[in-house]
Length: 470
Image (cartoon, rainbow, N blue to C red; front, side):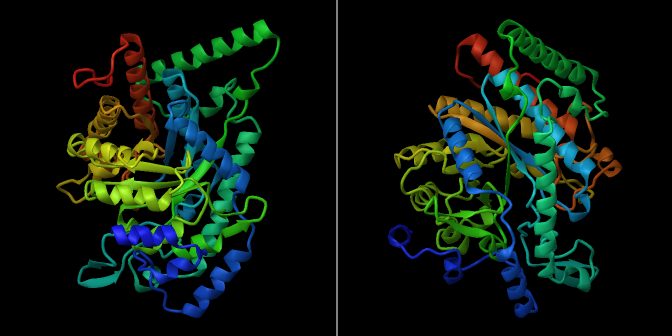
């Protein structure tokens, strides 16, 4: 690996297509390469979804989060569906992210950087290339960007035309989000716009209302005293993110910006690399090392300290602030053992990264009936442990990365409504991974906020005996 790292750092001929010389995993197998080439060429001519100055603005904000001056809330669907590209669904996702960020802002006393897992999260990695049902074996469903979830040969055949449909859905989603934000939907003066309507747990609803009232009173007081509006409270910045999995699609939207003298992936503000594609000699690392976006890497229990160190050197050799985010996803059972070693490994490189906790993926389990789910207590427990471990290691947790939806689904067990295994069948809608519903998401944000307040009040670092207040 050391030799590979040195070779990667000395390469100067990077190009958006240079990844073709490396092993590329998790890529669909298309039957018609001519049709695929035609679609990729069409994508490369379409306007970008984001622009370089937005990307640079996010990088600067992430640099602030690295030093504790801001906090990242990264959330959204595990895999977006083309069918869900409608105004009500998009608005609900935006609402829960706004609600969570309001709670975190009040509790952490830091600016919240809102990054949505939307407008491009259409491709998903799979543990196997094929799926077998009733003796029939077909290609695995890899997300709406690639094929269709129905179990037939026609539906499971990778279709390059879906890449264009994915671009269109991402563009429509991002356009609507921007219109809402620019039109005052995210104005802190009007949090009533964000009401999701089905909050059933009275204590949770009342606690949220107290936070809303407190912020409203503070704004009213300041504006009465100063005689002017707080303009920063009238609009919230939103950024997009998705896993940069389908490399031909990412390559097609990668452009050289002459003014910046840099290459950017203009399909999203912050792409990330998943655990299955983070091999140092792989195509994804080769692609990501050349783009100038802030990038994330999922970090799990199977990664070694040396692997992590070499990722730092390859992906951020100049130690640029805000460039590299490590999103750790160990699970509540492994985080105590694994995370301190990873923190020390990165510290020994002399480089800085932004640490974000993904409490979802390491806590996935399957019920006796074969349904994938996650327990709210385990999700909350991993976030709790992450705060404590970073603090005790002299590090800092700079954000959370959560799979969630604004819909009233029943996919994760527990939470304020105490959902049980039997409740999953009532409203289990995800085609891929289980998500927190809006109520559980807000409860998670409130728990983090209470934990932060307790630490400030005590003036002591968190310990194993100071858990997040449930």
